Image (cartoon, rainbow, N blue to C red; front, side):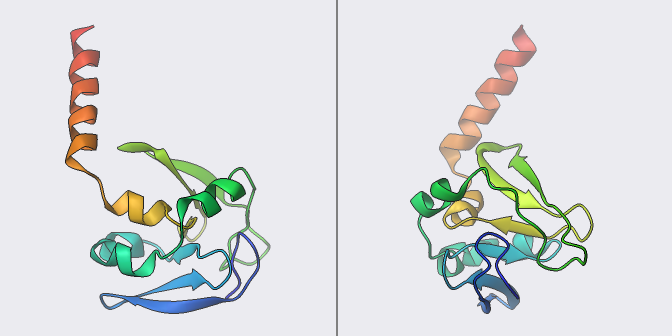
Length: 126
């Protein structure tokens, strides 16, 4: 498989029994449908890239590496962690996380939960 971000070769890495594709060049991660949920506990082991690499690549439109016809992927935001942006295919529901994004996604901290709760309470009080 070729990386949807930089077209370099991707290798399969084991994330607690789930095989995830990682780019050899940019270190981005490809997850087939729902794999990102099953691989969360192994995020630190499989997401070995750094966030600055991802920031440098943000904003580029990428194509799904699995779907025929060069299906364009859509940029999405995690609703619980709006600072995390990833690309998702509207056909096969695969997801691509730039280096560092998946590790951040999997580490939803207590502080982030507290901020989310405060925002919800503040919205209800208005």
